[in-house]
Image 1 (cartoon, one colour):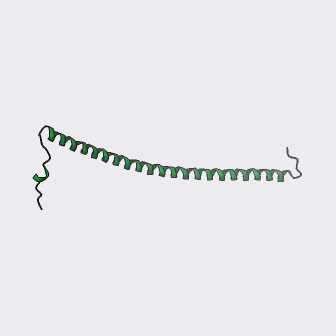
Image 2 (spheres, helix red, strand yellow):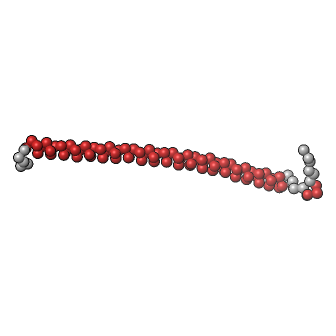
Image 3 (cartoon, helix red, strand yellow):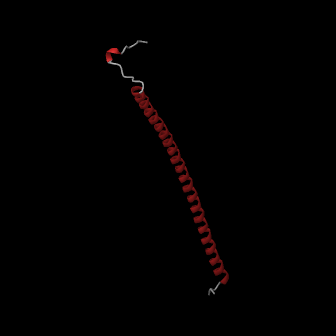
Length: 100
């Protein structure tokens, strides 16, 4: 029990300090929630940017694979033409250039 000359004033002062402390804690908690939400949104935006970059890399990878398959196919066509059809590249003197 508090020994105070004015019991009402001591009690009022104590409760006002408690309320003030609770309000300060409430404001700190609110600011922490706001900061947490802001960081969460910032990280989500960064994740979306990285996913878009990943999608672009996957598109480029697919295009490179397609180009590689095309180049391999051209080489295969040339081999078949030389071996099975006995085709050969003509000599330079036998090449005729046409003007459009």
